[in-house]
Length: 310
Image (spheres, rainbow, N blue to C red):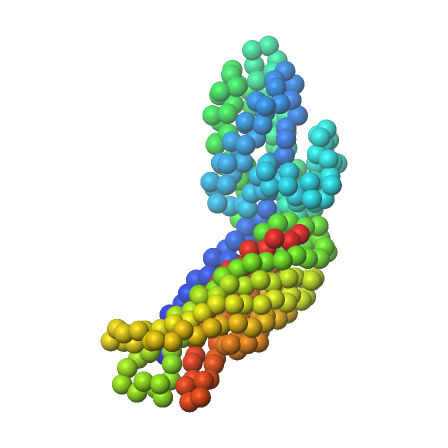
């Protein structure tokens, strides 16, 4: 039974880390507001939001949308109003920790709508792709946003995407982007679920499995250290089915070495049960041990914490 449990949890851990690694490999992009001439800003906003949505659909980038961008810039006390020149837009891209920004202009001349669009590498300021289009109506422009997203994203070479993903200065943009070198500081709340196996000293003829649920609160002081506590309970079943009459309280302190929000961090539970684990971008996997008289309990936990700091 213990071997089966270890295999199951190992497979789950591998899957979680595989999904997280795929997310890390995706470069970060944001479509900034376009310059306008002859059309309203609200009409341009509709096009920009459609373009962002279609870029998300390609699955090739992590997209910082309008609401996320405004929230991040507001936290940094940066006024986005009137920021339409390239120098200012590149500065916004750096604040967002983005690898790419998409900028451009939409204008109306007579009965034609003219679009210019560019994808820019934030680190170098180089225009990777650019183009211009003419449309007979604003509806045609918006309808073409899906094709534009594919032309500017899917057609980008794998080598370019890989190079962006490998750029070390852009590795810390989840869940919220911070300027390079900034320290994380703030609280997290989370939950963990676990399953454990009791030693045969408790029930020689049956297999006893204990399930547990606990809540966590942690405070991250910087990119190297977090401290918190956990509180929960565990109860179990006997196979063949029956109930274990007693409920075991779970409580203790949590010590975390490393940046659990953006990177890999070691977590140690100091309490009931004692345990060690790993956080990776707020995902948690851990192993625990507890001994009560002649009964030993071995288990594993999965969890997630929601970071609320900056």
